[in-house]
Length: 285
Image 1 (cartoon, helix red, strand yellow):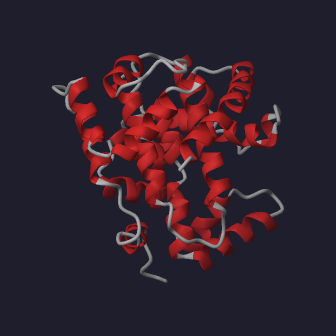
Image 2 (cartoon, rainbow, N blue to C red):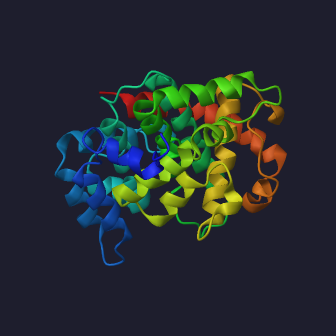
Image 3 (tube, rainbow, N blue to C red):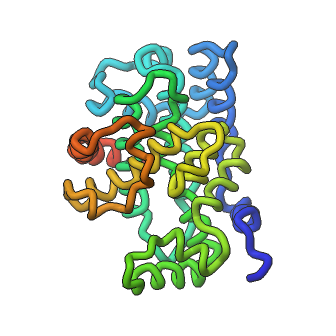
C-alpha cells in the first residue's frame, strides 16, 4: 500500500469507469469561444438516450421552464450552453459509475448527497457575482466522485477511515481520517479523475479542494461555493437549519461567497424543495 496514490487508484478504474466521448466533446465545445448553440446541440444529438434524458430534466420545474423545451436548440437558447453542458456531463458521469461496485456506500445515498450539493451550488452561485465560471451545478454533482473510486478500489482502507471518523471523540472529518490512513483523501482522487477525464480546470479545482477552499489556485470563489454547498446539502438531508449540524465551514468561505447566515438558511430550504425532483430526474433510467 506504500505505492498507492490518487492517480494509481484512477488508473485501476480505467477499464470500469470512463466518461463517454460525447461528454468530453460537449465540455470541450462549451470551452471553445467560437462554438455555437448548434455545435453543442449536434454533439448531444449523437447520443439519443442522453438527449432524451437531458430534455426531460430541462423541462422540470427546477429549471423554470416546465413543458416548454421541445428541442436541443431550444434547451440551449433557454438554459444557456454551460447549463446544458452541466446536465450532459452530469448525466453521463452518473451513467459511467452505474455498474461500479463498492461496499461502503449505497449509490442512492451517494447521489442524493451529490445532487443536493449540486442544487445548493447552483443556488449559491445565483446569488453571487455574475463573472463566475458557471460550473457550479456540475461541480457540486461531482465533488465527491473520488469516494466512489476509493471505495471500489481500496475498500479496506476506506472502511478504516470511516470507522476512525465515527470513533473520534472530536468529530474528525472523514477526509482527514483518509489522509491519516492513506496519505491522501477522496478529494485528491477526484481531482486526479477529473484531470484524467479532461474536465475544465475550474471543475478540477472544485473537486480537489472542496474541503479546503483556501488551497484553490485559479478559481477560489467557485471552490468556496462547492465547499459551502456541501454543508448546505448535509443540512438539507437531515432537515436542519443549525449550522453546527453540518461539516465545519472554512473561516473565509461565507465571505468569499458573500453569504450571510440568514441567506444560507434560505438556501437550505430552496435545496430541499428542488433536490427531490432533480434527484428523480437525474437517476431515472
